[in-house]
Length: 310
Ligand code: NAI
Image (cartoon, rainbow, N blue to C red; front, side, top):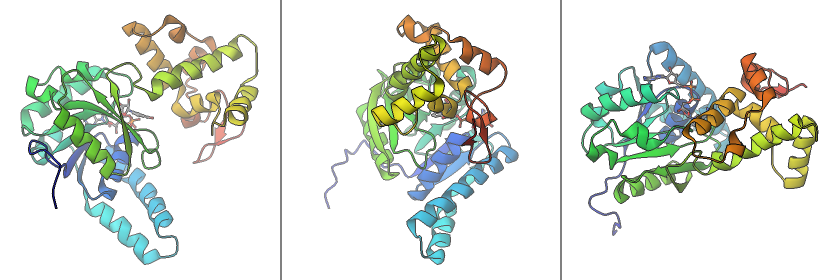
């Protein structure tokens, strides 16, 4: 057996996922399913328990799908996945054994920088640092770490829901080295995802295209040219999309959508037309109607799976 892996590149075997929320729990789960050693970290035992609950529900579904007629194999799969997951409340205390850190904490640059600054001091030289941020520049987050670390610092952008969505965007800063990039390609493959490469630019690939599309759909409504419902029907039946742009906005979260466009406007890096405010979006967010997660956005939703009612 001949390996094509360059000697400078180590295989990733142990992963620290910081943040046990919606995204962090999903990332920890898919890594454990691929039999990587995972430590999931959050601020408190309560937050960790929430993460464990998210994983428990999802991994059971995965096991049922994998082994539809065999309950024994299902529970074996569930148990084996859990055997790869440990938890902790101090990332600095567990990072010594990590090949890879995936950060999925709150979308706040100061909080992320503070975390990476202290992790940089505690982590081994070879440990690769990544952030799952959707809207912050990776180089901005990375700049608080040493020059050596910045060569091993990239974006690793997963999509919600992580166990179901096949894509990971690997975000390359100007400083990241090729071994690091190759390690990240390999580890995303190992966890069953397909990766694409992108420079450290607003929205990377997927959101750079989706956000202006969602915003323009809201402007069609604002200009009174078509109804919400008709826009969604049009894009589902006319373009073959599984969800229309208004439903997609509610799914993503109107607060998230608004904060992404406002971030772009502040940075001044995208065309002004993309970031012009939409009044109805501003008003809904001000009222706390964030979409599917709050039960109301452009449409209304009920029940644990957020079925649309209006
Ligand atoms: P979330 O709010 O569900 O989870 C964040 C978790 O981080 C919480 O459990 C919180 O207690 C924890 N946390 C906060 N500060 C921490 C710290 N200093 N140390 C350890 N844990 C800390 O958020 P979500 O949606 O999972 O987002 C996390 C990141 O993933 C954000 O950067 C977001 O931009 C990104 N992202 C979100 C997507 C989404 O659809 N929600 C999609 C792709 C990326």
